[in-house]
Length: 113
Image 1 (cartoon, rainbow, N blue to C red):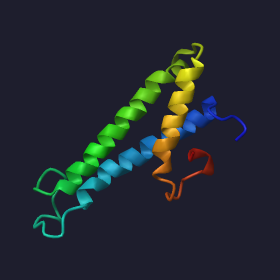
Image 2 (cartoon, helix red, strand yellow):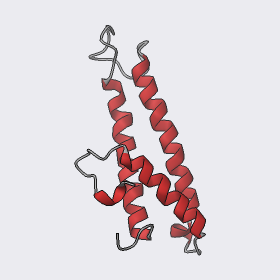
Image 3 (cartoon, rainbow, N blue to C red):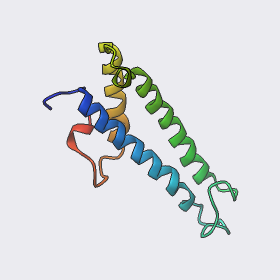
């Protein structure tokens, strides 16, 4: 890891996590309980299954962490001087979020803790 927590690595982590969250939200509708009558055609909120709603809630919570990280490293857009503590917190938070997706084909070893 040549530049741990550097701007390029943070940008890669942000993109990786955001893409996985987008995928998870899109795929939530595919996961229904085996007894669900509308499983083949229903969207996440069109039936009583708890699984799609739980997946969407998990994605919402993780997206909140992602947005918190983006606020902490907002210096990248504004050109300001970053606070080292904020950058370290965002970097570690993003690494933890990325770790859950370590088996994804686009996973890179630098993403995991």
